[in-house]
Length: 316
Ligand code: 48N
Image (tube, rainbow, N blue to C red):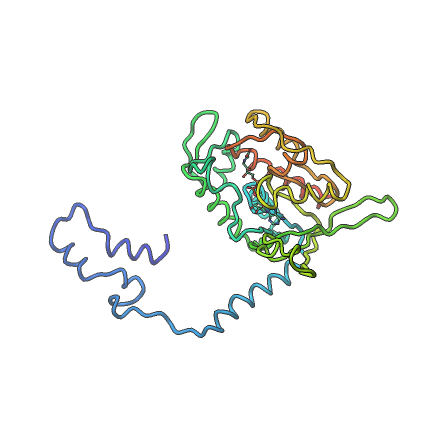
């Protein structure tokens, strides 16, 4: 618990066993303001600042990060449950790797802020709860599956753990608009060598159909993980791009079959072409896997397996 909260805790917790006036009297003199070094709220005051100081504090760091991650070891496209799980597993296994996560929306988390049909609880089938144990998320154990009381508890805990790694940078509100590719002049084989990005709001507003030359930015990377999901304006982005390259024919997501879908997604998690690994529900569109509906164990395990696939690329 932070110093501020501990301070508040000691100052203001009414002692349920102490009914003397002393407690009430001492509480009437104390205030939450004292936790902020103020005698009372009338004397509470923020330190002074100039607007440009705030602007420079943000922009300096953002452009330092853009410069640092212009050459990344791994780019993860999509900060949903499978992309974030992969980022966690990778950053924990290889703190030497520079990992950039690109998320088109302001809010990362993808479809994992709610369980299903806007219900709060999140169902995760065993043995995927082992990952919850690893990152310290509590759940109700229901036998063959567990339930996290609110999906946002899962997503916010995972997100905070990922952002704590010094070798991970989340660029949210940034969209991947294309893939950087290299063609082997001898074999003709195509490999992915990074991503093409633009501000998410521009991409989502489809400005390329209303403006010309809204030119993008780029990030070079040895491996790209595409975890774009199956849903939403950018769903299955890289799978669709491979189809437009003529490299893959999209299988199209099959109907819901919870028991078949989750094992199939984990089995499909792999490097599809050199330098491009897929995880999560984007694989359903790529390989015609069944959808599983409101259960997230496969997203977790697929993310962990994708991290392993990426490590294999570095070991080649
Ligand atoms: O949560 P999603 O959509 O994707 P996954 O695969 O991590 O998790 C899927 C899961 O939420 C389900 O769909 C569940 C299990 N339901 C199954 C079913 O049967 O209905 O996250 C993908 C993220 C999103 O936040 C997108 O905004 C982002 O990827 N994204 C992109 N970000 C940047 N550039 C792009 N081109 C892009 N495309 C998608």
